Image 1 (tube, rainbow, N blue to C red):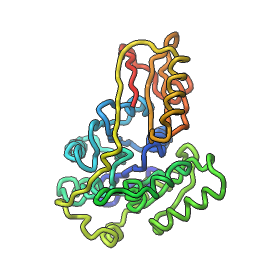
Image 2 (image 1 turned 30 degrees about the vertical axis):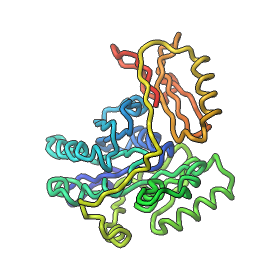
Image 3 (image 1 turned 180 degrees about the vertical axis):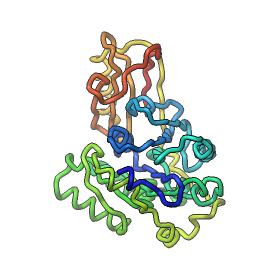
Image 4 (image 1 turned 90 degrees about the horizontal axis):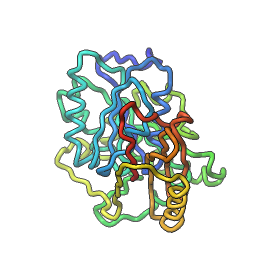
Length: 318
């Protein structure tokens, strides 16, 4: 694996991990960090709202993790991305690979553009692949959604720009649903390899060090790709609400509240996630929700890193 990720250009390969809300991007990051591939990886996390949760959901690791909150990496915090990459490029102890996990509402185009318009970044980093995770159970309505004029359908953009598509959660759909999704993916992007996954489990050799990004293909699709003056507009009807507070939570009351919330508003809740300090437990509890589906797990199960010594056990919900 390490040999595969060697880059004869001397530049560090970068993978952009994208996909709509709840597709399984952070699960993929954790899978990559768990693997014994011998690579030193830097992870750049981007969350849309003011309250960040992914830093707690990503498993404890020796890898370096950078956070960009309260904005989308394709627009409002793009300058933060450039500064982090410049900082990484100046470090004496280099990295074998960089992972950029975008928000579920990001257009990967402007993120990829970063590696071609900045001379300092272009000299030290090479875009290896755009990897898009697609939720086999929930993505189709988002793909088919009609947006107002001038507003991008981020789900479609993420698929169109992909070099590799992970069709995730195939265990949750019937064969007819899966085939309908595969047909739709091929109609949007016939050139990307589609890899079927459960829990974002994938052979690392299929997604890292693959040299799959093709600038020529992107320019054929979007001739304005390298135009830094171009603008894109997010759907203003999609927002984020974050809650952060100290204290202990009653697990039964929390489960009842989440169940009522998903029952009443699950159709409108594209993504929900949180970290909880539960009364009577030293474990960190984490929940993930996509529309009406929700799972709860703990650090005792190895699903999330435990509380660090001296760390205030903060509850955070998004």
